[in-house]
Amino acid sequence: MNNTYEIVRGTIILVLGIAAVGWIMWRWLKGSRDPGGLIFRWVVTAVVIILFILFGGRAMVAGGYTAMAGVLAAAVCGIVLAILWVPSIVDVVGRKFGSLFDGGDEEVDPKPYYSIFHAQRSKGNYQGALAEVRKQLEKFPMDFEGQMLLAALQAENLNDLPGAEITVQRFCNQPGHAPLNISYALNRLADWQLQLARDREAARQALEQIVTLLPDTEMALQAAQRIGRLAGTEVLLEPHTRRRMTLEKGAENIGLRREQDSLKQREVDPAETAAEYVKHLEQHPLDGHIRESLAVLYANHYQRLDMATDQLEQLIQQPNQPGKEVVRWLNLLADLQVQQGAEVELVRGTLERIVEGYPDGAAAENARRRLDILGLEMRAKQNKSQAVPLGSYEQNIGLKRRA
Image (cartoon, rainbow, N blue to C red):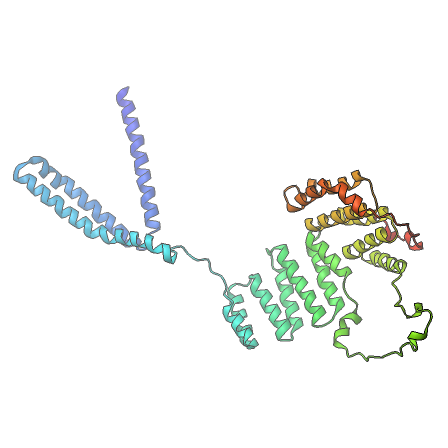
């Protein structure tokens, strides 16, 4: 029984040893610069060791002059092995130290280089820059940076906006690109349409493409908000149109007038402003800037904290809003609540929403500090001004939360 156990145990150890040696030799061969030479050294080493065991080992055991012959045979075998392996060992050790400075044998991932492109473009050699960026894109047709550099060169330097649009559209149609890169490319295309061609509709189409390609994302929401803020064509053309300056005749005998009211500049009517905001939001309900301005107008002029809260809550509850914007709106809501003399618990609840929603950020820490001194802030900033009646536009659906 013991003999059987020893045989099985020895067999297992032998198999494991052979497997370990085989794995080491395979890894060694795989990482070798000269696989053929390595195999040759292995074969010669095996032959030398076998010959030494068969002849030199027996001679050393025999004793006398025969033992001296065995020692001489061992020395000869050592010299042969040294000739075989010393250069290889020195090379391995040298490469280990050299890799500290040159990176060793690690393969560098191929990537495009645009230094020549930038140099040619900075010198005004746009055709040379075009040839260089296309050369790189032939090797790396999916590269985001190269395609955007090509589009920028076409739009800004070669006066080829249609070509830039084709480049951007080709990029957007390629699979596997990050949504953020797609949004950036189409936003850049919208910028060029507005700045270079002053084409509002083309810019709108580029932004609407973001909404279509990236639905229910923060990028889509930002694109929709930007669509609402697109300037009219006349505003885009204004910087490039030479306007005739007309000087109106000023008031005469200013010092002799008893009343000066007619000389004052006409103030903007808040009711007209609110009505314009409402009309704009009916067409572009995702325009956060206008909705925020309307909320501030409701609170500061009309003393209608409830309507201001409704407008800000629509922004806060809108899906895919950036966290920093939500924090800013919550802080603005807390400011308006303090100014309008709301209950302490109401303001506290607004600030605690920041702490609960973003507990590990700087916004939460600022909200905690503000909660500590909330009582002092409310006593200092409470505003008890009289309410101003709203106009008929209050009934407009743009003022109210949409279903």
